[in-house]
Image 1 (tube, rainbow, N blue to C red):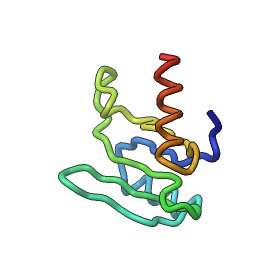
Image 2 (image 1 turned 120 degrees about the vertical axis):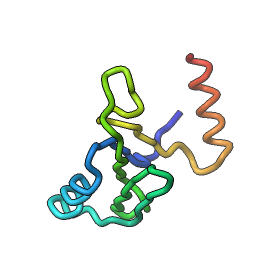
Image 3 (image 1 turned 90 degrees about the vertical axis):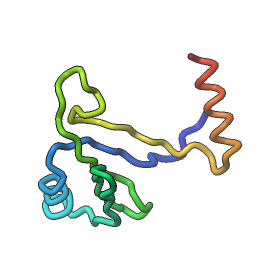
Length: 97
């Protein structure tokens, strides 16, 4: 399997407005989209590939609530250029457990 590029990174934050201000004003990342749907809030920043970096608001939760804890949500890598390439990579990963 060959990773062609970093797709995007998503971080979980407790204060979306404050985090957006930091990443856009302090670091200069341009906002390309926002999502506010049914209490699910995200801001997407672009470095040229739509959403290279995003933040999503969570309530912080306690240590046992992974989905609401602050930190890394996920990192996506670009693998190939087709659905076939992606399926092939998934098969290899599944085979490795």
